[in-house]
Length: 271
Image (cartoon, rainbow, N blue to C red):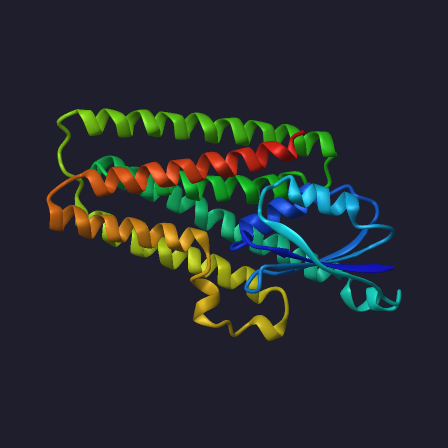
């Protein structure tokens, strides 16, 4: 039995963890995966060499490198395998975070349209992207690899289409005579979304082990999703200060680009 530790620089929230899990799903040499999101590390127990595992993770372009590889006793497996109760708990938590992300997708999309904020609309698509990742994980449980790939392909292309529509709308608003976004709505809704993202991260990390139940604040704020929420809040403040919609359009464009990047990662799973 071998143990390989990967350093994954861009693994900063549970959605990246689920992408990696789906990518490695079906590799019969893998015995166990242990994710440490705060330290951006993944420990893999596996048979044979780690070359195929390394290639699969590298295909996601998350900045992965192998830290170490060593042989371990097979008895270590007994302490690492998930019990049926733990798996049910994790599945339940996945449904919870899926619901939270999808609800905030609806909230941010609706308020973004009402308040004329591209930042909120873009952030809603980022929430939808995370929902897709959790949904693919759950819908593929007990199903075939082909089923998982079909779902991933549909989700990836759907994200790309929505993001392209978003970019077109950004250009229309940049060259058109659009009214200013409601900065107060941007700030309030993004603050609520930030709280929701932090809650999702906390719940999923808490489920790993008792030692992770009390997380440092710095762990929560390493999340890319939370940084996006803070970006929309800052953009709302700049809209008010500069009396311009440019900050909102800039943040919206950045988030749309991140959504497309995430879509391509999902599409890699479908290959």
